[in-house]
Image (tube, rainbow, N blue to C red; front, side, top):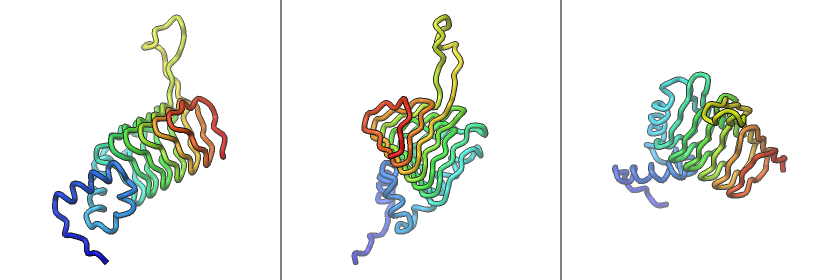
Length: 190
């Protein structure tokens, strides 16, 4: 068996960067590398300061992800779930156990919220908006009220890179959404 080289600051910095962009590396190595758990506790503690963000056991949050949550627009990360680098998350979001939101996703749960079921994978660059603007022809768009019905993504769903999901959509368990799709209607379970 190969012995691990002693950790120096440069190694730790490089591994943290890799983990931020590829969170599966954290889940694979969190007990192997002695600094991992303390690092994530620090990142999550800072993100949870407002009290509206909760983290499950062994969940992962990239330090360069942005979580915006208030008491009425909370964010919950389930056990062993992850949010990768440069994601923007605005609550309400309920991310199930073992689910992941990969780099550069934009997720806005608005008032009705987004639920991502256990084991689901949201690939890089996806966008989800759980709200919509009004379309009254006699009123400027900027003055129209928003509505929010929410988005529900089942268990073990794979949403391909660059896909967009609009308000009111449900995606059934085990479904696959192809890369670059715009999902505007129900996707049946597979």
